Amino acid sequence: MGQTISEKILAKHAGRKEVEPGQLIECKVDLVLGNDITAPPAIKEFERIGVKRVFDRKKIYLVPDHFSPAKDIKSAQQIKMMRDFAKKYKIVNFFEIGCMGIEHVLLPEIGAIRPGELIIGADSHTCTYGALGTLSTGVGSTDMAAAMATGRVWFKVPEQLKFVYTGKLAKWVEAKDLILYTIGKIGVDGARYMSMEFTGPVIRKLSISGRLTMANMAIEAGAKNGIFAADEKTNAYLRKVHAGKGIIYRSDSDAAYKRVYEWDVSKIEPQVALPHLPSNTKPVSKCKKIKINQSVIGSCTNGRIEDMRVAAKVLKGKRVHRDLRLIILPGTQEIKLQMMKEGLMETFIKAGAVVSTPTCGPCLGGHMGILAEGERSIATTNRNFVGRMGHPESEVYLSNVAVAAASAIAGRIVSPRDL
Image (cartoon, rainbow, N blue to C red; front, side, top):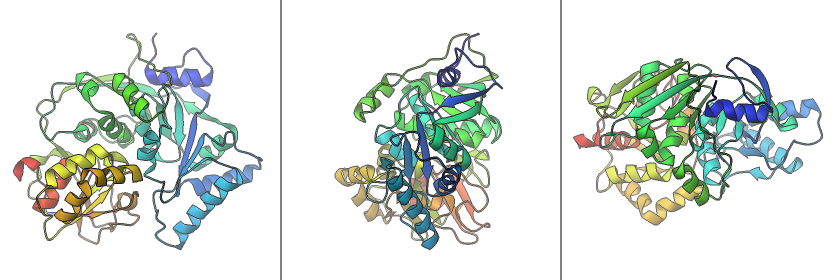
């Protein structure tokens, strides 16, 4: 029986010829990631283990991005713990204010991710890197601690799902709509502890930015990982960020999948996920009466320069609705600099938006845009659970960038076509 991309990567890192679903294996890891919420508990566990050094000081990445810049004393203490740990163990890749970014936007941008690698991060959206032909997945802080000490982690080999997208995307329909549509079809547990492999002619045309968006939200369907076959677009991106080629794997024609989904996406509209699940999706045309108080554009899902360009295209020459707040969160300092070079910052500020330093901020209800009781926000983020962005009686609606920008102008959820 053939093997999928994910199975081949796991087998390689476990020192085996092949693996099969349900099998327990121990693997070497190529990169270990932690942020300012998950790294401090991992650091405490690492110190408790009592080892004298980390397994590889160049393969550990520490990125304080959730509450950074520090929103209060507790978050400042968390970041200080990371800073002190990095200095003590001479960890090369510690990114703080000035050079930091949202972790899952930053790492691909700096060339830290390569095809064929096995990456773990103490953050559920570590699955983002599957866009580059990488097997990446989130783990707990104790697993992060063990991996920092040993360079190894255990896995149960996941079952495999295949998603084939055909047709042609309509105007204003983006990669975000594909993944929201998918989650709406299979549910938030439809891929529970499985690998989601994305393929088909629509996928091959997607930019790397779009693939990163889709892989990012694989976890919202319960998946262990999401993955794309690396291709010439991947190679071009890797050359651009000086990442090196890595190892490119492709699924065998006789690889076994638990289920294969095939969808013609030609007729789908931009999708909106209504409270309080990413699977509670509707076409934007069914959401036009929903008034909102806030629009958030950014996050590890949609905080890349391509996203900023889409937002500027919709907002240029227009004004944000007077009853609404528009918060824009570029994913990294480099993206913010590029926004300045292209005049996007001016477009946003003239439209009445506020542009933040790179941070996860409001996505997790941290800071920089918390909702009050009864308020509603449309957001290009990845989760809309109860209280996700603030008060437990607030509401979050998920959408693509174009819809979030158009809605900021209208004061209610609309498509750019409606402006």
